[in-house]
Image (tube, rainbow, N blue to C red; front, top):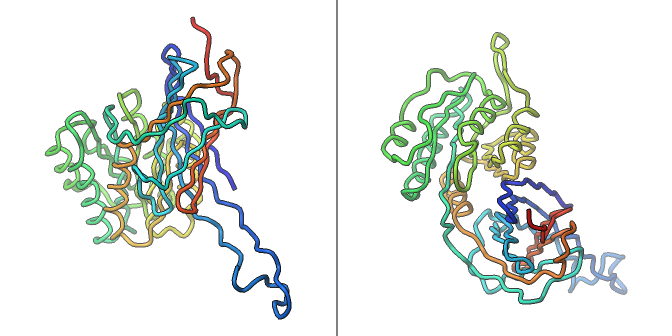
Length: 335
């Protein structure tokens, strides 16, 4: 099963930047059936292989300014939602229109991204959030802020029946810590749609790697006497229009379909967790994902000013993932 989300971030001259989130589950490999006594269950010494866990690939940008020489910046998370760094077991291949590109192909671990990270934290303060969950959420946000560099910025939104902006985008860590500690005006219901919409508006148009990180333990639910300004689709469309991926952390949700939809359709990643003890690790994983990347360099065989498909596949210790960009103009003509 393959899920493909593509979003154009910018078009500066010849440079086209995309965010692509692809998650792929490997096909189940069926072992050949064995002989007597097996009852059709196959060779007991070679049982069928289970499905491989998935790798998540995010293409941060594709640079074609020096076409036919192309640069692709790529972040990879493993099945445990940890960033794959400089691992010698990592195998990556790149294809144009299904044809593997090997001409001057190389992939190197680039490490820290130089661009600033600009984040909005959307924090659930509905009544269903236990005291421990709130404390763990607040500590997780503070752990993320601890890692921020001077050029990075963050904003804090706390939501219940409505989103409440506690502090706008700032690099001031003290201001962010104080905003995390400040109690919201209310603690009722869970207005996810308006929260995502407003969070995107806060970060839209900023520099660097943009993202909204949403944490919630419930579905969208507001009181009958409160008017919701935006629908789920409007929240998603607003994020796509402003090129802001929404990464969601779902704490013990029984029906997480809408939360998953928000992340998948905006180019983010969905993190389901059962216990708030895991929140801190997820926030730190997201900081690493947003701040570190691999660099692929190769010479394109499609330098012809027409659209092609660009696909990247990765394999690491039996886990696989791939990504594809359809109708991609690899070597556009000059203005």
